[in-house]
Image 1: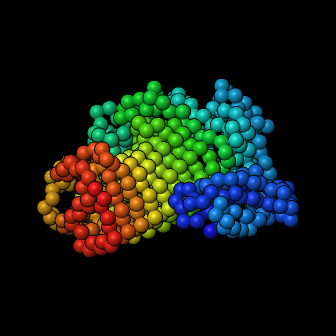
Image 2 (image 1 turned 30 degrees about the vertical axis):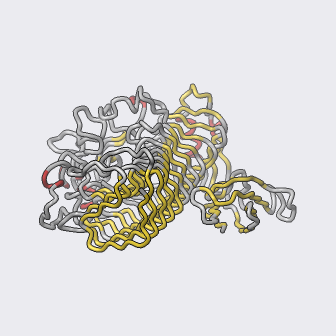
Image 3 (image 1 turned 60 degrees about the horizontal axis):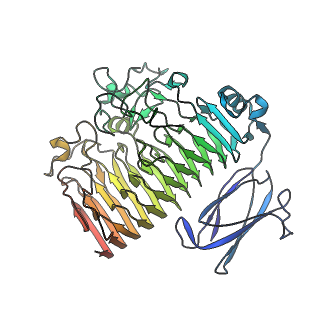
Length: 550
């Protein structure tokens, strides 16, 4: 019932599973007693005590290299326990001792950077209570950064002060084109460009124009290399590092700056709040992330990424403020995250057409559990930029409230034969007020050509190198109430049908005042209200105990 998920020298994240979702079925009290420092293991009156009902919980203020015993007592009388030891810590580097003001007025970038750069291996960078203005920080390997309770990293909004990532950099093996991605020397739409297409319609380009040769690149926008502002926190090639604590990372975006005319590019594409590229064993634990200029957390070509008990809060109408967008990553664990934002809560990706074809790096081995997703466009989305495919994705024990879509898969002709979605499993999920709980859309009308006959034709076309493939999808033990348009819209390609879909133990009911609307973003999709499952172009459909309550 209780399991250790992640440990730092001064914190631990626990999974307390009594069959609940984001919250346990029974509230509990928790007691952590240490061998030394924080209470004695043989003294029941000492230690850290708290009460909660979240399934995934993080406890702070522990001591390094200390053994701890954890006891959980549920209201129904059940008891469970586990032991663990915190990790080694070599030193503490306090940013105030390096000159940081933390007054919300001075620019603290140089002082924060100096503390990070000077921190020894296995050391802690401590950011105490206060507001620290900065133009972007860079994480380094083998350290922990603690944002103490009351600490706030506040991103500046003067664009001329913020570093920018070029779309391409020269490679020592070959000279890569350094012009902006796109055709005819002009930048492809990055969601910020004057006269651009609708949101998400980045130019498809081609392999030579968009990527040159397999050179080094940093910034991308929706799967295409683009000039980007650095993240408010960036990690490039970092290993064995963590940002943790009870503080806040604030992108300080408003409708007067980063969210103003979001399709107009000004110097570069809008920054992510947290950007990771080529990282391994990097984690975020406990912190609050808010007011992101664009995507909030973007792990990119990284391995072993952990995101635990993080809170992500962006206004419901903020543009492109996805919560977590793992792209071409291997081994992503997302647990106990509370999302409330202005786009998809989680969007799993692997590059657009050229990126997928050239690097052939799928997003795989992703586990999402114990999360609460509210007010976003999609709770968990796969695609549409999935040119290298997505496989072995499990979403379980989650709550979705008031999102437009629940479990959403987006693809289209042109994504290519490497764009294979396989072994995607959604189970043990409760939804409330989700407009359409299940959407599998093979005709998603993104990109400048998204509404052309090639993409939207419902007649079978030849299967070739441009044809994507959806293999096995499993939806089981899912309870959705107060839905609106339909229980689900599932449509494969006529020339490449979805191989297998399993619907097991599914219950869907509708809002008494259900709205009417289009369940999937594609041409030729009619408006629906209180419809069941609309399923087209699926080779094997298994239904077991599926209830539609109108």
